Image (cartoon, rainbow over all chains, first blue to last red; front, side, top):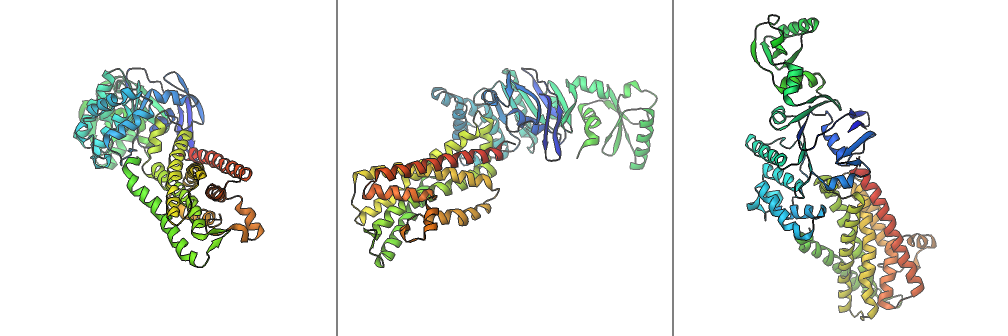
Length: 291
Length: 237
């Protein structure tokens, strides 16, 4: 995606987005709610038409060749759009047809997707009777029915129990191991840190930082950081002081975190020293813009 | 999908026009024995075919597609697969239209019981039904793309469907209407459907019938194009 803009009325959902996803990687699109991640995903499937910019997916230029691109990608949306009146097997079979799988291959594809999502035992049940986690697995299985080269996962684990999130994580890792490219949007930092080979941090419709999680941490937060606790007034004072000294900080709830602490020895107030993580980078880069 | 619902859908689509036919045919038929030279129950029986097609096509298209688009968002899921809006609209219109056309046979079968003599040209009735049904299914898709809630559809039902259904020559011949209303009725696709069904039952008028077929085909094409246009505006932003 190159110089992509998309506006809804007065809202600039995507505002000069530049994004290149290398093949074969799990790529994380990390950003707060409203950063434009979902809009970017919908532009990639041709369901939103960009106002300006060049978009290429799997060598096809969008929106003109979007149908060809969609044939080779699988999409798992943020909110369920299952036909919940159908039984699990039929949900998968309908999409095997929509992806134009030849009739001989369809039954096998459905069985494979059922196995992948661990839903074999529920194949004959209506989708509406599945739990939230199972429905999400069915959504992912539906997106994988035609063994796509590119998989788009829009907030795949939002609103799920920790156990189910971890199950889905191993599913996502197995996708990449089989050679698919995964583009996953999330606002869970841990998810990006655990799964993504590379991460783009989005804020207000554009990418504000891009790299491997380790690179991003080193570049924007250093090796170590120091958390300082204190009253809100005290922290405000400290922050103003740090800003005037040019020390990078970020707000972290009831404390103030000094980034690049390893490079600033002796100049920091007393606090708890720890390793820098992606959350430090995320809040540093997007914190001020969160709705 | 149809496998899951055929019992309820078929029941509603078949039983309603049959009740209408029996009620009007027997009740009203006591007051009016013949219309346009045809026993009234046979007149209504042939008209009820068109009504069955209209209701089955337009209502299922309006409600099902609003549900699938707005609440279940299945169309959204389909568009992420290599499927375009025109294919969704075409698929729905063909399926719902064909089904509606076949349901239209039910009132005809009942009319046989009331003495309507079978004729070979009646095999054309399902074809007329399917052509009409496709147009009305596309019209239903158009209406559902123009509203965002089920409530919005009630304007359509009272403002459009009911007049279409009443002023089509279904229950009474249009010859008694004032000229201006009769001219307006020519724009009613259901009128062309009613005429064709009656001609299949009581004798074809080849010249006029070709015009009726052309009118129904033009209506289907126009409704399809508008439905694709409005549905795309809803689904692709």
